[in-house]
Amino acid sequence: MDPDIPTFGKKEDGLEYTFRPGGYLVVKNEIGAIAAVRSEKGFYLPGGGLDDGESPEAAAIREAGEECGMRVEIDGEIGTADEFIFVEEENTHFQKRGTFFSARPISVDRGGDHELVWLPRTEAIEKLKHESQRWAVERSPAP
Image 1 (cartoon, rainbow, N blue to C red):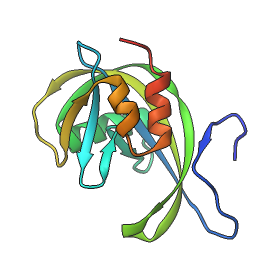
Image 2: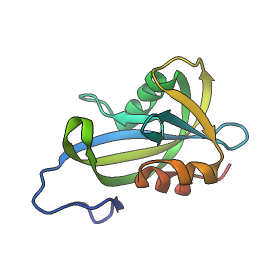
Image 3: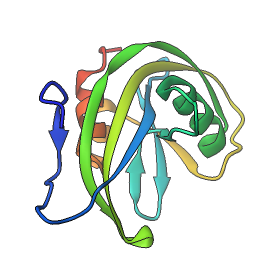
Image 4: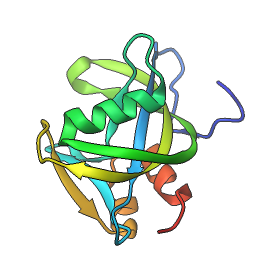
């Protein structure tokens, strides 16, 4: 583990963790609401894991389009954080390393395979499932 990267969740001794880097977006609309992807398991920031040879920024942009049909423009990098989680449907423990970017929407065509919702900043911080994602929203520039 890198001591300069904030870490969330608990790494349990004796368990194997799969390292999964990803890129995620804190997208704010014109009134400062935060884009979240809603699923039956909770609320998440748009983004996801890197494909081979892909940068975190490129993954975040690609995933926003795939998940919720949103095209974005990245304003800057917020930071990187690790989170230890267990994904039940994959029966796997992960060390997720998320690189988070601030972005603004260019267009939303309501396509994608998840529901896009806009949450007030405080509500996003309360509802996002992963601690690292709440951390990124808290660190993101105010609207």
